[in-house]
Length: 546
Image (cartoon, rainbow, N blue to C red; front, side):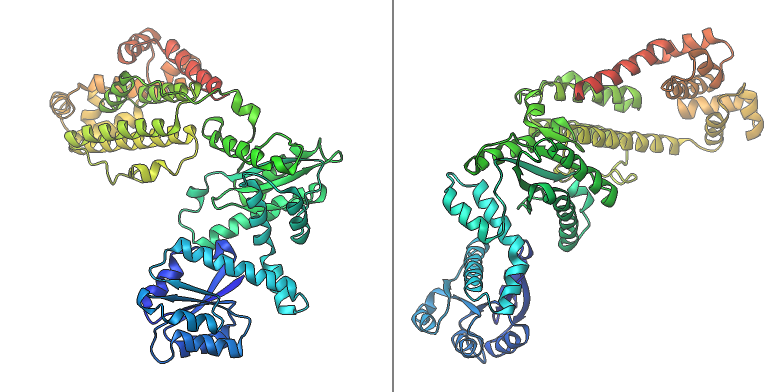
């Protein structure tokens, strides 16, 4: 790690420099800070930084005097001075003293990063020149991975590739590009945002480094390939394709996924480019794997994806979306019909996948439906915002998810929460004997129960119970019991090991014809048709994903 010391008499500026830049991701660490030149010099002697970033005007000892002291006692340290516009007269003196960079305020984080990276390059260059020095050798070794990543990234992002320069530089950094041909892979950690949502930056880096090391251990013996971090959260690697490993590569990629899942409990999606014949074609391979990764939203997670897999999907199209879907969702929400609501959502997402709908449009549609649903719930006086663990956070939530399947499950979860909140609010209106009656029906629906049974356990007459129940629920005891039984029947019908007549018996119907008639009246189709519709919807969804 390159060590940095910040010296400035204003605490706000020091903290700003420290916190506004992700130093660790660039192979650097801020080892300390000081409020004046004397304190800065003492900390420099103690902490031995590689780079000192200092202000000019400070109490006790100013930045110029600090530079002089550093040059006399620590000649190798790099000094970057940040000065106000009215202090430019100090620039000549600062440069005379050997300041490496003299910057004028105000300076943005991006500009400061460029300057510090330039100093890092100078440190690395000097380290190579004085490689006999043990301390410098250690610094080079510690930063080798970072330099290798920067080197490979520069190739992938280049508009044109200078092969002789790359060949020479690759030898310096111990990057093997000796393959007859090349393939690029991109390793994306599935649900990384959700997994690391409550982790510190260090904990996130630890996860990525462990996966990087596992992948390198598998790839290196036959491909001599290095796995690199990206500025995003994915990893990537240039694979040397040789006659000796050409037919084993996909097995290696499978082994990476298997090993990481077994060791760390996370899944990976690996995008694999075509094989290219020259280093100069690596930028094209990089564009290809980025395009593959973008299509993960349609193809799905926990798999290896090639450009052929993506091409099978066709081009991204405009969303095919009917306002009738929206009306159905809201309608079934109001009637608290979880099954029909689920069927509509499955149909919507099946269409999204079939048409390879634009992902951003899909997210906007989902947010629109949720917003309308919550407006309806507000009108009904339903307290849904803090119900269970399903609070809705809009874009902040939806951006966490990586695939259409993720968003579909998220939507279902949200609407299930809404319905549970509605049911809770409705149930709270039921008083005394009504609550007891409903619980009794939920527990004994499979038995031959009647009004007299409920009246007996609530110590009221059957007529009184019937009047109270009808007033509180809007339904007769018989209607309510039938609804409970038929709701349970819909659940059991999903399990194909039970015959339809067995389902009738399990929910309290001794006469199958009565069960079938009530079911059709309540659901709109026969029990057999209901089961067939469920199976067909499941099959359609499976085919759509394929």
